[in-house]
Image (cartoon, rainbow, N blue to C red; front, side):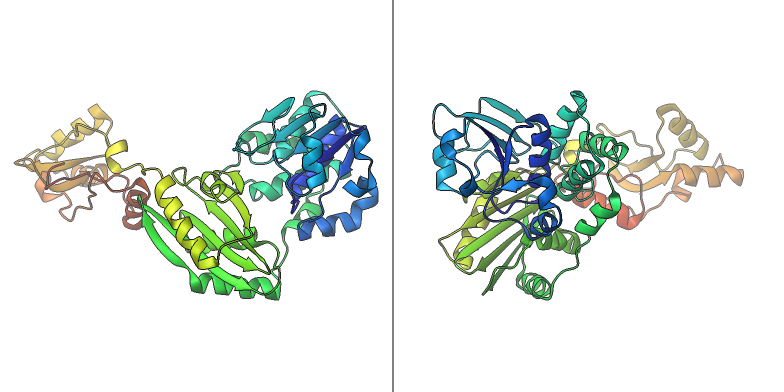
Length: 412
């Protein structure tokens, strides 16, 4: 007997991955974990008969000879399942988009691809093997990809995810159904938790990145902490957000990152969880919220990578002109070197900047013979070489400039 299963708190990508895997292993049973995400529970309440799922209690484990794991390498929701996976005669096939981590089960077949959703990996194989899909199946698979990629907007999204969605649309995927499950309004409890998290937020500046850590304690379980964490990331415009929420007898830790130097998966693996660089989570049974926040910040400081700085991306040496250079000469140099502006330097010190637009205005008035010092901008926006690239971008956007000199002690 073959069975297909996934991780606890099963999300829509995990469910869709199970459905996709069953197309590749048509005799396999879909074995659902005990705990499902609310949106999956809602989906199964409507389509359970069509998908024909079962629980671990409903099958004879002695008859199982192959387990297909999707969207995880370590299910961790049943001691019986763990015992089954540890039996040497059991064949294990793994399909996952999360990077390998310590403590993972090893498979006879292991398929890992760094894409936005595990469903993408499996649909690529369905497409390759020319296995037909019904419109409902295509809709479920598209829903899984849209869920895990934020409708193809999250940083981890790849061109493969987009091409697979296009394929599923061609197979009849219904975007109205997809939209209905993705556009879920926040409940009263979720709104209250979001307010608490925002109010408790602590901001940290590390390696040029703005990192937010938010904490809360609630008496009952509130679903979709991952959704709230991503909302905070969007609201606060941080490079990374980590939320720590005590619910009943457990603490839930969720991380989201927008930048490569903060690997959320690597950081949260330290706490027994997992994920990928942009999104990860863990469930912790011991510790307090405050103690966990201190440990988390310590791990972030240890794991964060240095940011790219202005010095890493700047052009050097810089072509400059002097205040005595004529407009005509400056225009000729711009054409020759393909530049749209020049720093103006006197005695090795930056005194101004002149742009192609300044040159064109002077030429329009027949002032090609004039010197650039009469037309250059003297209020120069500049940056130091160690300024993170993200802050350089913010400065350029705020001042609406296409270039910025990198300056040390008034020298370009």
